[in-house]
Length: 123
Image 1 (tube, rainbow, N blue to C red):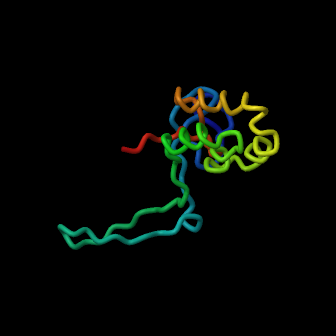
Image 2: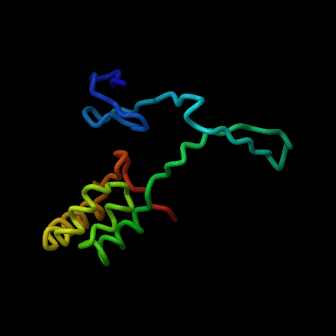
């Protein structure tokens, strides 16, 4: 799919264009996402919701993992970046430099998970 504003490539599940930053709506195929029925306690009626199964990762959990065991790439495994996690594991976070950079990126909110989404601050 391409961005309607700039024509940049939009990956499935991406909420905004990385090239221009505009919000993008994507349709989810009915066969790809399971439908769940939920009954409202007030009205007793049923509503259907689409479950994608892949939730955004927690900011605090990622920050703590990076701080305490970041040299082993645990925060990369948690956010879905398996290949980079393996490289960090075998190089000990490039002797701590890569881990420090990831820590700063997480602190400033610039770190993204493997799907390109920002980490969420859950309260």
